[in-house]
Length: 325
Ligand code: PEP
Ligand code: MG
Image (cartoon, rainbow, N blue to C red):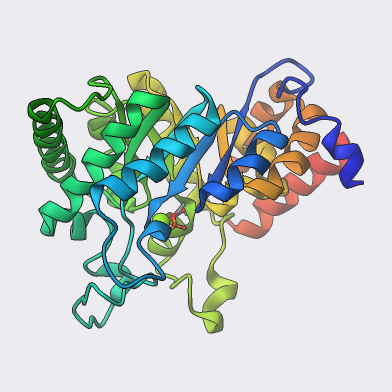
């Protein structure tokens, strides 16, 4: 089966009625890039840069980070590489960077909050990403933004980082695209405002679902409540996607939900044009995409939006699935 799937790696990624959907990869190491290319992904939609900081005993410096990001950009040979800035705290810890013990780490000092708190650490990473942008189509993405103020603060540090490189005579792409992940419900609710000041969105459903349903994604005893098909999740996704489209910026999905084969009709109905997922999910999702019908998914979405429960939504999607296969 795997061999047969491999045959579709380089055919155009579109539905039967020719709606294109770009399939990108989530990676946490540059070793995965060979597979990204082999599976015909359009590029990297999420490089989880924190893995560069983990399993070691000190922070990676600017040179070391630049080297890794540059290697990734070069290997991708002009394909997009979205580097998400450090996303630690919550479930991800660094031994050499002591963080406060918190009662609610998922709601605590993590991701962009740490970066805005430790400005030198953040600027070091920004300079490394900028330097790599000279060697390929590198884009920058901030995790866990929850307000316009945070976005502006991050961008002010980015401007400083650019200035510093300029005065050191280091080349970089001054027009590097900057995006953010929508993973805090508050950010989704002001997506129209945020969209005016970024180049793209990527929806991080893993955290978005945990926050909108108030269900800890790491807690097995309530895992049954962690339901991506909850109508509240679907509404928030629609709000975000519609806001991005109204502002004319691209919106992708990079959480695990993007690689859920049952959700594909939902993404098509919502008008998503890019999904980013684990490398091994790209071909199975593509296989399903090639037999899908976009217009039918748009009709299906209208039904989904009428549903009051996740069971009803899953039922609608199951019926669609049995019609198309
Ligand atoms: C997400 O929250 O959906 C996401 C992609 O980020 P992570 O899983 O790394 O928190
Ligand atoms: Mg997240």
